[in-house]
Image: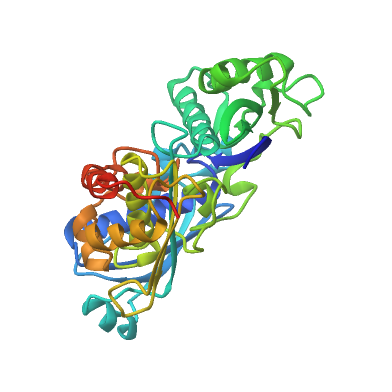
Length: 391
């Protein structure tokens, strides 16, 4: 895009009800993989006032103490006090897990995909993480909220929170942060005399302590800050909003900058290509950008249930590619094993790593294998070894 335009992305904290559910579902997955790497997991969680329901299909040789796991996850997040509307020690927990369908299992056992679908990957050179800037800033804001809450620096904050960042672009490059939105659950300690709004002092403290350290280098006198714009946010978490696994797929990926395949990630073992192939798509796109074959790279894989190889591979570089996109497709098929078994092996996915992914985005964090760029050198050598006109 040319000229001036604005892109907005949001994130949510680990105490947001949907993210609580994602973390519980992935905690169950991790517990299965810890003792049974071949276990099959499709775990969904529902949370509301005083109640957690864990369901789905799991086939495993190990035992998972769902009650204990749910309560530990809630404690780690911070739901330990009735003042936040939800208490890990007293909430009800219902276990509704059953076995996986044998009709699906027979196709997966043979090495095929666990479902049909389209999976999207993306990378760009806007940030060191090769991610879009708006979503990275949004994630860093909610991570900052958790840091100051748990450290006690702002001891009136609760576990539930959201952020949103609007970035102004000029001719495809980030120029400045135009607007920051913060919604922070809090105790009644910072309400003004009316009891309907937080004090101006608290608002300024939140901006100074949370927003400025993250976005200050890209703000100016015209940047707008919106903090708890309804006035207050005392009632939050599952008490105010029902949560369900897999309902924050744009937060989990690229912040709406590019399309999404539609499948959620949390609670699914890596035989489910909704998750593993999306991780591989990010891995491929990031390696292409790291190889400097393009400034932006969008990847789409299409899979059919029970079939190992993808039925389609598509690359779009938005006009930034240094070689034709068909050549990029050829390089992808040559250097990346896109079968479910190949993906699991390449990214080492049969390990209990998933609960960490369930808050603050699945991409842009170098602790995960799909964020590494081991293929960049060979892609660069083969892609740029001969001068090739961009199609």
